Every structure is written in structure tokens, then in C-alpha cells.
Figure 1 (spheres, rainbow, N blue to C red):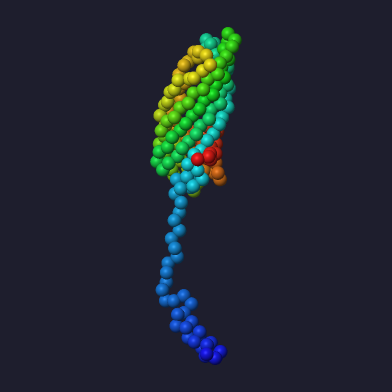
Figure 2: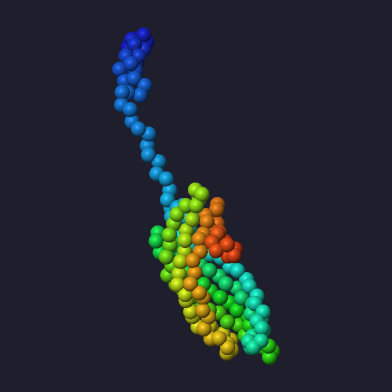
Length: 176
């Protein structure tokens, strides 16, 4: 085929098919992530560690308790698990002391939503109690934690407690 004939055939083919055809296809629908998708895309497991020191008044036999509380959240779509490990160092008024560790594992209810456009998750659990494992006799052998309801806000790669306001914990993704 000579060059002018070839050009003419290409031009006819282009004119016959057009640039986009007559079909008007709608643009693809982009699925917006749900709040649960946003949180779980980063991690299904989140953790926090916090230190605390308490001074107790008489008549308590304990004068000082230093504790480290590690909280691990395993999140799903509507439910999950909260694991709390409390390590305590106790000093007695009479002298001496002991070390204790208490582990709780409890189911939690989850509700995802949005606040001012940002993903949030509400985590709720009932009151829990567990025996302390100590290096000696503790005057209170059972550690009790009250029921809990916190609202966590996803900011970048952190879940920050925004309710109750006095709770300043932040959770970071942890290894699966």
C-alpha cells in the first residue's frame, strides 16, 4: 500500500470510531472508606503504656504504689478484646514491699463513627476483677477495674482518647 492510501484508511478508521465513541460511560464509583475501614487498615491491634504513682493515707497499710499499666486493644468490626496488664511496686508503712502483676482480658463492644469528618471508635467494657500475683501477701488480693467507655479519635497513625477528657492516653499500632 502506498503512503497516501494508508493515511486515508487510518483517517477513515478514526472518523468511523471517533475519539470516545457514542457511549457515555459514567465515571467509576469511588467507594468511601468507612470509619472501621480507616482504623483497621492501619492496624487491628493497638497498645498504650502509662505509669502512675499513688500515695495512700492511713489507715491503709500501703504508703506508695507505683504502677505501669499496659493496655492492648484487638479491634474487629463490632467487637474486640481489651487486655490490661498492671505491674505494681508496693511500699508498706511498716517497711518492706512487694511486686505484683495482674492481667485482665475482657471482651469489648465497638461502635465506629465520625466526628467532624474524622474516624472515631467507641470502646465499652464492663467492670472487671482479677487476682493479683504478688511476691508476698497483698492486703487487697483482688484488683478491680470499673466499667469503661472511651471514645478514640484516629489522627494520622494514633488513636487518641477524646472522651472522657481527663483520659490522656494515646494508642499506637502494635504488631499483629
